[in-house]
Image (cartoon, rainbow, N blue to C red):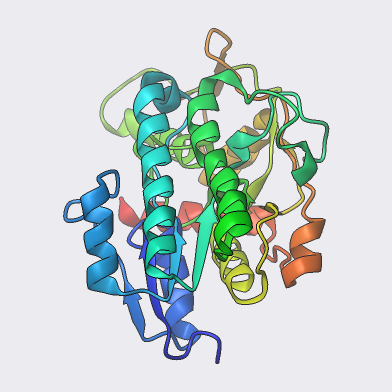
Length: 317
C-alpha cells in the first residue's frame, strides 16, 4: 500500500480491458493520482502527443498497456499497422520517460513474441531462439522491441524499466467484436449468436464455425490475475530481464470449444474450418520466475474464469 502512496501513475490503455482492472487495483492500493490517456485525445503513435502527456500528467510511474491488438484475422489484415503503431507507442513512451527522469516504466509484451516452435513450457531464455509464428509476427516483434529498448536504456542510462510477457488474457469487459477479438470472447460471442438464430426465425440448426483444426494448444490468464501480477512486478521487480505472466495451464482449442459450448448451453453442431490458419502449434509458459522474483501466482481456476466471462457477456445482451 505504501509503495503507491503519493505516486502519480499514468496507465496507457487504462480504459481498456486489462487497464480497467489495473486501475481499479491501483486505487484499492491507495494510489490517488492515476492518469488514463484516451486514444481520441492522445495518439501515442505521435511523438508530440507523448511529450504532451508527460508534460500534463507528470508521472512518477508509467504502466504501458496500450496496444493495437486482435486475433489471427486482425493480425493478418493489418500487419503493417500493428507493427508500426505498437513499435512507435512503446519506443516514444520509453524515450520521453528517460528524458524527463521517470522513476519507473512498466511495459507489457506479448506471448506472440516467442518463436513459432518454442519448446514447452516457454522459458524467457527462449525468446530469441527463432522467428515468431507468421500470422502475428509483426505484432510480436514490435512488442519485443520493448525488451531491447529496456535493456539498452538500463545499460546506458540506468533507466528503470521492466518488461512482462503475458499469455492470452480473458475475462469480463473483453473485446467481443468478431472482427478484432481473441479466441475466447470470439467463441463466446459465436455461441450466443448461434443460439439466437432460431429465435430470429432461422429454421436451420444452430451451428458454431471455428477456425482451424482444433489441435493447437493455448494457455490463458484471467484478467484480474494479470492485473495483480503487473502491480506486484511494479512494486517488487527492478530488472530488465523478461518475465512471463501466465497460469501454467495448457488446453487444446478443441477442448476449449467443448467447455465454452457446455457453459453457454449451445445445442448445435461445431464445424471446424480447416482452411483457416491454426496459428502457433502450442503455447504454455514457464511461470516460475514471476513467483521467484515478485511472488506472483495465478489464482483463478480456468473454468471459474470462463463462467464469470460468460455471465458478464450474457448480462450485456
